[in-house]
Image 1 (cartoon, rainbow, N blue to C red):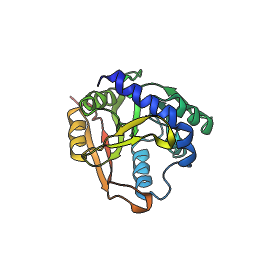
Image 2 (cartoon, one colour):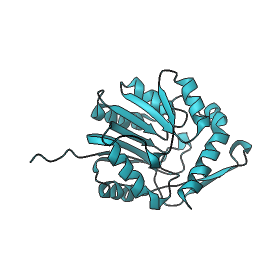
Image 3 (cartoon, rainbow, N blue to C red):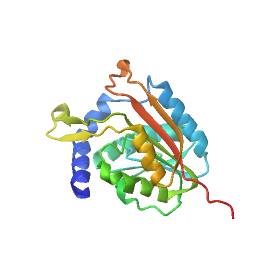
Length: 220
C-alpha cells in the first residue's frame, strides 16, 4: 500500500464518521482514565509552558483542548477536515491545521513537544521509522514525544461504523518494538507504561503510553 492509499483511506474513514464519533464520544475522552490523565500531566510538566506543542492526528481536538487546559501552547493537525471542523467548533481559541504526520511542514527543532495519541495506529509498520524520524526532526533538543497506542499484535478492522460505507484497520503494536523504533530514530525513551484493558471502558486489549525525549547535544 502506498502512502497515498492509506492516507486516503484514513481521511475518507474519519470524514465519514466525524459527527457520529463526536456524538458518541463526548468530552475529552479521559473520563474514567486516571492513569492516562496522570501520564498526560507528567508529560505536560516535562514539556513546560514555553515552547509550542503539536497534537498530531488530533481528531476532534478533545486532547488538544485538554493539553491547553494544562497550560501548554498547543495546536492540532489532522488529515480529516470533518474532524477538524469539530475541533474548531469545540475549541474556538485554538489553532487547527489540515495535514499529514508523514509530511510535516514544520521547521527543524521548532517544537517543545509532539503528541501522537492513538494517531499512529493507521500508519503501516514499514512507515513507522519515517514517521518517528519526522517527529525527531521537528522537536528541539530536549523536547518530548508522547505516544499512545493499543498493545498487541492483531489489527482490529472497523467495518461500516454507524452504517457508513467505509472501513479501516486499527493496528496494535508491541510496546518493546515501538520503543526500539524510537531509539533507532534518535530518541531516549523516558517512560514506558502498559496498563491492562479496563472492562468498564470496553477496552479489548492493554493500552500503552511511551514518553521519549530528543537528547540535548553533548557539550564539547
